[in-house]
Length: 234
Image (cartoon, rainbow, N blue to C red; front, side, top):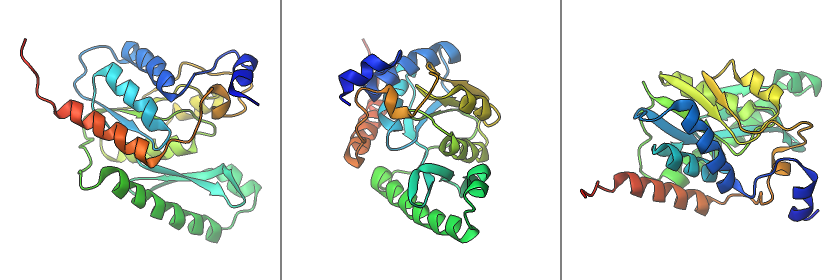
């Protein structure tokens, strides 16, 4: 199906992740109010980074990463049996694990593999740059959309361990039932679109091409340069 055909089939669709980020940023600006100097936008790589870059611009807030990896069911990797995040957090979707009779050995094997990829991404994206301080801040966790929410649950769990003032989950599109479940993990959940039936995150974008490592590095570098630039007096 061509992107233009898909756009006609659904009542709400974003052109790309940048447009989704601008829409989400406007919603967050209203939800959080102005003048919040404690806000830190944390993107879930890779697809969440282009969205979060626009959100950070809208909120005039710094941008950084919350590294998290989905634990896909072997042979059906698009189906999440859980997720891991920075700080040693692991969230399991026990319903999926039980329904498919997935052994603990398989869970551990997939966890080790995804942990290695999480560490690779940390080196690739951050280099020698130290992670930001999270304690006492309003953390806005951003991805390009949610399906089961397992990945975002792991991200919220990792964020909670740092002692923030608030944890806000923000995504452009997700099923309502997933957002309801996430309300237990976050202080606030912001999502402009909750289409039903949902089908999948990619159905709600015209352009949903995979975000590359180079794009992630470029967006982060640009955001860090802007924040480091000294103010120029008029």
